[in-house]
Image (tube, rainbow, N blue to C red; front, side, top):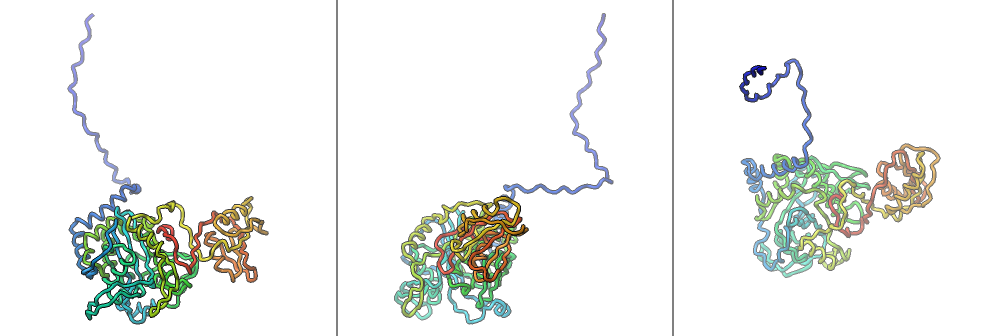
Length: 496
């Protein structure tokens, strides 16, 4: 039987792209929320902002205008016999009494009256590591005992032999050059750049950032500057920030206490600049840089290239990238005839500090870094001197014992005899005698959110009733306001 004939083969067609079906016009189009940017995208944006400033037309114009707007000073003219260069970059940052550049309203509001002294109000060495991943700030007390080297007065041509002074007087006697020479002679650290900031520039910088957040566990009140801050967290504007960093009459620590606050403020300033998107936005970066550099003086070598280099370095900066220390003090109230009371450096510890700076060695390398753990709160009463009785004000079994043990581990002198409160309480309460209010505030810093309840006549024992809102005991760090800071701290250890 014959096979049936095959159907003729069909010619093969080229595959056609799928037809797009148009969305019906009456159906509304929903807006889709963009996905969260991954970390690499943020890094790319940061890099892009720096590249925009570095290479785009507007970036070139911005950097050129900034460079041209900086007042220059020949800070290193004819300097000889200088220390050998180490690793990294050292900037001598000087804060001057520039009250002659502020408005009359600001004078009255922030108590900046008086005659400008044309002296240094603040002095720091800022060391930027060679690989640009760390900044070390060393505060030099203004009342440090110093010896200025032999020099010639630029105005009169008069020769001056080497003689003792307070460190801040070097600027009044011989300006930036004599200041740099004096600092180099004392530290044996070669200064690469000089940057001089006045009151007006400082206030503008803080304002253009939208304020800087600081926190305090104790009241800060200074009748000289007008500073008046209650315990807690505050966002300071430019004028308020100036009051904060200038205050010297808050406690018995005078200039040493002020330097601690200045270091805390610088850490908070870095936190604000790196977390507010300034470095991701070329225009905001420009505005901040203009505010910083618009009314400063710098050495002639601090130009556009250096600005861009610092901008690149700050890309990945955070408070944990910075570390702060005050030069070690060996003798307080060192009296010098004709000069008065000075601070004499501890030569052995000072040599160790500045050797680490020359060698580009971190001062806080042994500090554990836990990015999700809040930094310890600073208190001005040693917790070992604070007696605490803990009671359980909840239905949770064993809570008072856990709170007692945690407070003891933090350093408080607990009774180790937890009790049961007569009634349940929703919030943790600290009962204290008003005569021991500083101790109560130190304990409250370890128990965030707790309520302070004064009980006149209770005596030195503090009584804690743990409430339903209790979560954990916060770490604290005791700093004696009458003593200089003994160890370096990282920026993330002192910000809020």
